[in-house]
Length: 200
Image (cartoon, rainbow, N blue to C red; front, side, top):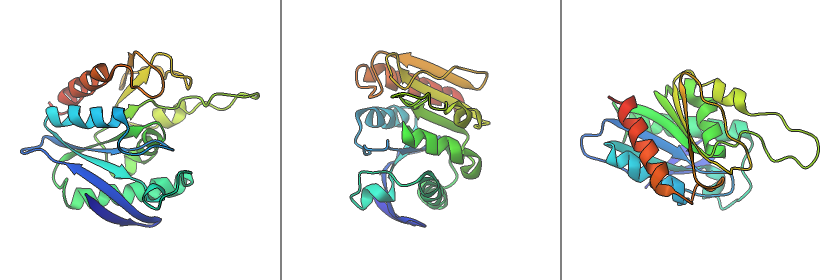
């Protein structure tokens, strides 16, 4: 584990390196969760199996013990600082894949041009927040802004909806809801296959 100073406080990166790595995957957590979420753990294991080193990143608000997420611009700035630190150190020289679950996936998408990510991995992308009245805007433009290849792994009964696929966006539906806990084997298999193809 390494601690990294960002413009908005101290972040932590939990490193899972592999020898002779083909790439580096940096993953962020969801809004109210942490890096021990079961789908993130499964994703890290799948990446290691595909020959990819992993960094699971705790945002500064989580490191500080807060459960309420920071504003988007703070999340993005902290994320970029962490990625820059890792690219200069533990992930130096590796093709970078960014990603995360839910809120972390949104951060990875928004900052992909700035971090130079070769691809983006989205676990349970929160497409449309469940509405309690007036419709809320879709977050599809955030996914659409990614110019590289994207993998979205989404539960079939996710209450946030399921994004559509496109030429560069692969969407894999698995059993379960937003937690992605029902079929972690399928989550891992989709990630390992996509990483293998991306880095071939």
